Image (cartoon, rainbow over all chains, first blue to last red; front, side, top):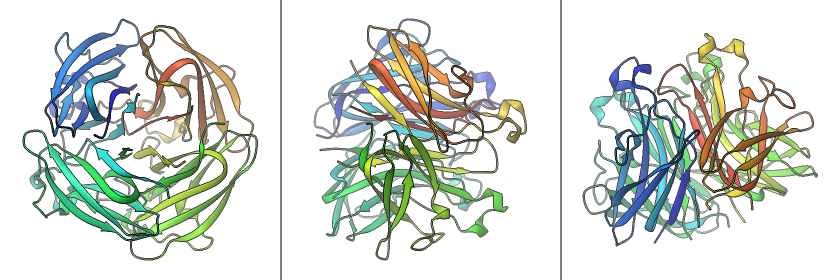
Length: 122
Length: 122
Length: 122
Length: 122
């Protein structure tokens, strides 16, 4: 099945709410995961910072033959990801998945701003 | 010949028409396929969703030594891709091709907004 | 030396000049090539279209230990790349190089809009 | 540990300060590095130009289990990177890391504009 079990995204940043002129202008940092296989994927996501120990794992599941688009803004267990701070992410899955990192915002249809495939490990 | 037979794109989203201030501002989610080889490529595209079974295959062809840029907005067989919903895509080709995912909009020359190479399978 | 000899970029599009409100707003479709090695790289670039035979090779050189950022808008031999038409690119080099595809425009400092590493062949 | 020791980014460009209408609108060309391993990473970064010899190494460290987001605008030893000039980058690390290239600007929360994973060497 297409994909691999480990992925990394060095870039992450959730702007502080107050920097956007309107609440609906805040950015959404999104992890898009495709599980094209026939078994549910259990993800363990570790979040790395510049100046303190990593936090995690955040546990997520992606059902078989489904895609899930997770917003880092909504992560809350074991703790929310702080705004205004650089972070990075490692995703480990028990079955092969494909991960893409996209930042988009909800103001208008066309304002998704960046995207890259995550870096696949072995 | 450069390329491979399987590709995945975890991120996909066609905005609802009404979210753009003008019809010409709607985003176009595009799959760019290069077939640099000497045989026509037959593609089978499966579209994955967050909350229901995948749909497909959508069948497309790319002639030998040609590039085709497909808009997900125009997919209609077996059914259109719903707007306002997350999706993901797996492309399977009978000959090696190269796939890139680009979102662009038609308002101005310079407003293409994101692009990434698709993830290549074996 | 880092890199490989064959690269592909499925997505390419040079807007028609008239679509930009000002000449300086036209998009620039750029191929960024890094030759980190000790020998000059000779590139042969083939441009693929949706509805006619490929054109090329366009010949370019990148000196040893240099980077060259080529604008597709400026390609002229054997013929200019038409505006308003989808194209794709294959780059073949006689020594290893690294290729990245970026679209940027010259209106403001910050308005580069998309970028992705090209797809590496063997 | 996820990552590799050599990475390349063919595209780089720091706009001249004067091109932005306000100081806070200048672009930031950023190298995001994730060191998910248990040893500090020492990076040697070489910057390539179009018309002169490469400069470097710029030495940077990323602590164990940390991410560091470096702005090329802030590089100063052995010399600042000139504005208004194309450059490219090779990153060599003594332990495996993952590198991503992002251009963002500080005007608003949502205006990060391009990102791609760097090209991994062996």
